Length: 559
Image (cartoon, rainbow, N blue to C red; front, side, top):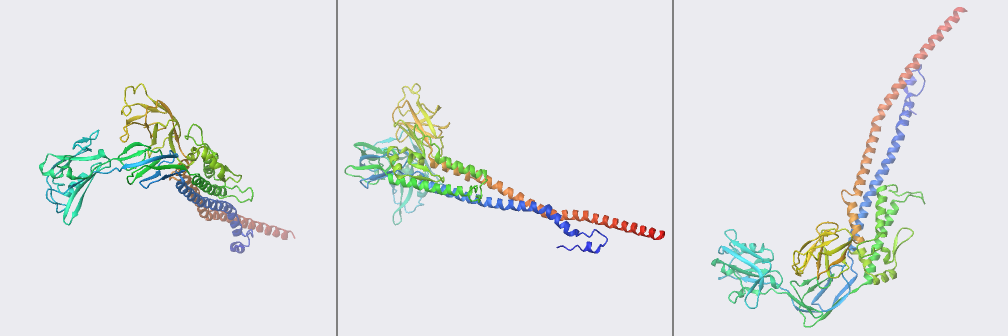
């Protein structure tokens, strides 16, 4: 109990414990507000901590999903180590079997220039002038055929690069050509020039400057000695059909697969790919299990406490509720762009249980996979496909065309009389005219969508296709990954919500500080009021005593 010494000393006052009364009034004025703010402070701190955990969980989910994305459903095999077969595009890979024979490997042309007299230093001085390097084919009749369109480079040798190393650096800067200085024996060096793979990428080097004749190379008898290895195409047969490619890595023979050629073979051998139901099921179950972890986590933090009275940390948070609903919607909604009809996770035997988690039935999954592998791709593998197999399709690496179906139309009237492969052929996708060109590896026309919802899609018709439907499918995995990127971004929902909560906490802390700062002011106001009251009471008591004494004096006079 607070002792009010002034009230004790002032015997003529009210006799009330003013200090205690003021303290009680100050407490009544501030403690409820302070308690409410302190409770809100604790709640906000808990919510901020919970959001930090949410960010961690969403980041972990994104990382785990990335390891499952682009899951393979086919197992490629090769009966000979001369060919290594791998899946390059899970969305277009299919089961197949073919007989392959590797006739020859692709190689680079290698030219060595040892000099009219040995070069004894990498910095040995050479003559000045200009070398002309032309790409094309060295023919067996000692002629040279330039590439079409022609590819020619002029290398100027002057005071800045007239050394062996300087010339190597200048040549090495050219596209499709590499060069280096090689020590062949002790104190002896050569300039080595290499082409890209493929017979049509060989190099002819000529000059009109006599001092640079030691660096010329043509397919004539007198200078062919500069060539140490010839440029060559890879040659193979696939089911008896002869095929040539400029590289030993070949990705456009079996759709969705890449072949690496390592050696030649004397006879054909089998390469194939078959559906791997077990690995497909394992990947799907791993996805379901991982999504269940996130679902359980979100259920706990959003629990309203109806059963046990204990609510989750973010039970009443609208942003987190919306995110949880969105994530759940991805697994229950339709997935478009994988054919004429929408796909659903449930088609693969995935069901949602009463507690909100999911499960996958192995038998139902494998039966569904045998009937239609597209549903698996709709989950794991984004794709660009068509209902016409004569259209080769792909999308640019950094493009994001909108999922859905698009009508391909070949402009027959505008293309009349133009051969397949003509760069000015016209076509449209989804009603938008595509930009045309010629694919260098096949010689066929290609069409690029450079605007509209289908922007980023490239089409190479292997024959004239007047009309077709092109499907752009964004897999469940990619859709979820894009959404997680969005909410985890520095400007995303999670960061914005954290900023709001932190601002609320700052405001609460400011209000608490204001209350502490106002306590003395409130106390002083009450003390002034009660001091004034005490003065008034003292004065009234003094007046009362005066009147009382006066009346007593009157009474005594009457007596």
